[in-house]
Structures are given as C-alpha cells and as structure tokens.
Image (cartoon, rainbow, N blue to C red):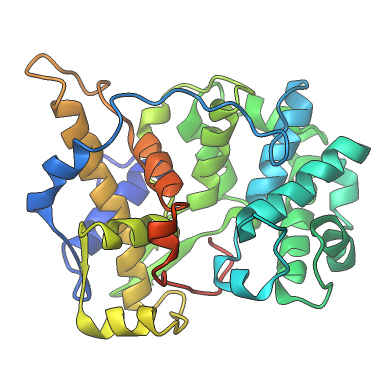
Length: 323
C-alpha cells in the first residue's frame, strides 16, 4: 500500500482507486459526477432509530453488543431471494428485525454465549430454516465475535469500542483483524481490502447515537451490491455488455472475480469523487469537512436503493460473507 496509508480506511481507499484505474468491465462516468453530487442533500441529519430493527436506547454495553452482533452477520445479499422475508421487509431488514426482537425479549447475548452459538439458534432468532447455508455462516461469525470479546476485551462489548480510543478508523482497524469481519479480495495478484462491515460498525454506532466516534469522515463507502446498483441505474457506473447481461439475467457473480471486485471498487471510488464534488459545491471557501462524507453519501445512495425504481431492475448478486 502507499506510504500515506495509515489505517484500514486509507488502505481501502487507495486499493479501490487503483482497481478503478485498471478496471475493464466497469468504469466511472467522471463527467457526470458534479451534476449527480448536486442531487444529494446538502446535509444529513441522524435518522430516528427504527425500534423494529434497531436498539434505540440503553447503555453502551447493550448498544455496542447489538451493533457488533448485527454487523457481524450483515451479509447474505446473494441469498436474499432464497430466505423467508417478513411482510414489507427486505432481506437485510428481515434479519435485523429478528435480532432486534431477540435483544428486546431476552437482552443481548453474552460474549460467552456467542462462543457456542449454533446455526439452529441463529435460525430461530431470524426466522429461517436452520439448514439454510446462511445460518451456519452467521453462527460462525458470531462465535468469532464471542471468542474475541472474551479473550481480548474481558467479555465486554463496550470495551471493544473503548479500545478504539474515540475514533472511527481505529475501531475499523481493530475489527478488521477479526475473522467475523474479514473482507479482502485479490485483483491482478494484489490484495484489495474492502472491510465493508468493519467500517460499518463505527458508522452505525455514531448514526444511532450510541457513541460519538471522531474522524468518521475517513471512513469509505461500505462496498456491497446495492450502492453499485444504484450508481449503475443512475448512469454513474458504466458496465460492459457482458457484465450487464449477466446481472440482468440474474446470474450469480463469483465472489472475488475481476468483475465483482471492479463493481465494488469502482463504487467506492465513485463515492469518493461524489463526496469531494459535494464538498466543493459549498464554494471557494469550503474546507474538506464541508459537504457529505463518503459514509454519508453511501447512506443516501443505499436509502435510494429501497425505492421501487431501483428494485424493479436486477441488481448484482454474489454469495459470500462480505456483504
């Protein structure tokens, strides 16, 4: 990585820019960035937590446990068409609602309980078939969380947050070392870190008001399949005909394939460009802290993706534990 890369966020940003500069199947329409940035809101207020899918109150231990556990299993979008969804809920919100209800009914899992959690228990919580492959993946991720919290943080989820010393990048750095948050691909024999969920934890803690971690502007976009889809539908990302046909036909993309890595990396880089353009729109006297941060741009685009216009068009799907 470049010498200026000092944390996971820098590494993700540099690697994604590198991939975007070499991508063959995906490109960014740079000429459209400024106009598209102008469609973003001037600022982003913290949304009110949805009590059906978020823990809205409680102490740091409770809220840290919820965010870390939920983001540890915040993957499976390639399987969403195969799970039982709650009425009016997407795949993600179906899983989030199940975890939220468990926390409301019985409180958080202790770290010790997580070290032995089974696929069957996870399936009961989220209302799915225990034989569904996602359940084993979720259980393995939660067991890793439990082991890490017990062995390294005295069994306290709040201690995980406290170990970051008050900054979002430091918490992302810490979590990037856990198997539960592993997310590194390879492109042209070079490692390409994404760490979507490791970065999402500090962003979610801040967004829900659980804590106020500094330096959040250093976080990148959270590379998944929905933000690239929104940027494709809105003509910011341009895909070659072969990749377009595969996505439109509902074909699963191989995780770690050049096309899948390019989609994620080009989306991260496009969000960086949008954040920069959004900040510069504040005028000649603007500073790097003006305008939406990359994480905030990501949130706006992810929210747009819930609209019928975007849901009506097939999005890229890949079955993996990254997103």
